[in-house]
Image (cartoon, rainbow, N blue to C red):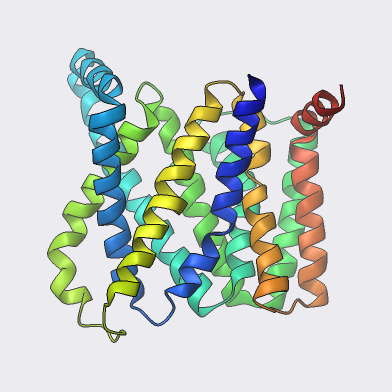
Length: 300
C-alpha cells in the first residue's frame, strides 16, 4: 500500500520538475496573459473537481468556518486573500524567469525554498531547529553569496520566488483545519477576482496573437502541471509523513537543473557550480534523518 503513496509523491514532484518545458513553449506570449489564463483555467478545473470529488471536504470546511469565532473567521479570510496573492505572484515571476532569464534560476529558487521555509517557520511560528539544521542554513547562506556574486539579478529573482512560496507554505499552517484543495480553490478565486477586471489592461502589452496553441499549452500547464500533481501530492500525504514528502520535493529542482544543462544548453560558472554543490550539501544535512530512513526502508 505504501508503494502507491511513494509513487504518487515521486510522480507529483517529477511532473513539477518538467514544468519549464511547457512554460518555455509559451515564450513569446505575454507573461501577464499566461498567468491570467493559468489562474482562470486552474480555478475552473478545481471547481469542477471540487463538486464531483470533494463535496465532503467542502461541507467540512463550511462547518469548521461556522464554528469559529468572528476573530478567527477574519483571520482565515485575511490569510486566504494574502495567500492567493502570494501564490499568483510566485507563479508569475517563475514564468518570467524561465522564459526570459534561465531555467536554472527557477530551479535554484525551489532548492533554497525549504531552507527559507525553515527560517520563516522559526521566525513566524517559533519552530525549533536542531544544530545540524542551523549548520545547513549557514551552508545555504554561503551558497547564496556565491550565487549573488555570479549573476546578482538572477540570484534576486531566485530568492524572491523561493521567499514567496516559502511564506505561502508557512501561512498555510495557520489554516491547517481546512482541506488544501478547498483552500487553493478559494485562493485562486480571490486571485481571479483581482485579475479578471485587469484583462483589458494586461492585453495591451506586446504579445503574439493568442491562438489555439496558446490555449492548449495553458490547459496543459493548468491540468498536468498544476491540478494533477497537486492531487497526487495530497494523496501521498494520506499515507506518508510530511517530512518524507518534503524530501521528494527536491526532485523538482533536480529535474529543472537537468533540463537547464542537458536540454536548454545553459552554461554554469565555477561559482555557480560550487553554490549548487553547497546547497545540495545543505539540503542533505538539513533533511539527513528523513533521507536516511527512506534509503534504509528501500533496502530493507
